[in-house]
Length: 264
Picture (tube, rainbow, N blue to C red):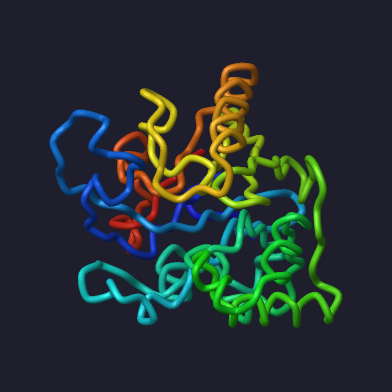
C-alpha cells in the first residue's frame, strides 16, 4: 500500500490543545517575554517504505485526558480512516518514547513489529506504578507493550537502528532516558521526525527548553546533535508538538485536510 497523494510521510494530528507558553517552557519568567496562548498539536506519523507502512508513535485515547473537553480531537482509527490509511497495512511501529500521548493504542496494530529503545523500556518497567504515572507514563500502555514482547513482536533497539528501508531510529535522550528521533529518506530529501526530542521550534532557535526533561545536559546535547545532523544531511527537523509544521507543509487533500499534513 502507498500513502495517499503520493506522500512519503504524513503527519496525523489527533488532538489540538490550547496551552499557555508559561506552561510549556522551562523557567518561562526568565525568558522575559509576555505570556500567550498557543495551539499544541498531538500527532503520529505514517511513513511509506518499500518494506510497508511504518507508524511513528501511536497516540492515546484522548477521552482519558483531563483536558479532553478543552481540545479538538479524534481517535487514531478515525484519523487513519479519514486519511485513507488502512491500519492493517502498518507493518512496523516505532515508539519514540513511552509518555502516555505517544504509546497507547498498541492493540490496534496486532501484527506490527514494535521498535523501542531498550533503555527507555527498561527504565520505565523498572519503576513502581506511581512513579510511572508521575513520569507521564500510563501503566496500562506498558502492560500492552509487555504483552507484545511476550508475543515476540517487540524489538528493543540500541544505538542507531534501521527499522525499514529509509527509516532509521536515532537516539536522542534527555526528554526521557531513551527518547528517539527518526531519520526518514524520501525522494524529496531526508526528514527528521523529532517527536519529543524537539517539541517546538523555539527549542532549536533561540534554544528554550521544554518544561519536561529527564537530564538537562543530555537534553541540550541531543537537540544540538539533531541540529548538526539536520545541517549535515539537509534534513529539516519536524518538531513533535508545533502547530507551525502545518504552515510549512501542505495539507493532505480530502477528508483529513484539517488535521493531516504531507511532510514529504
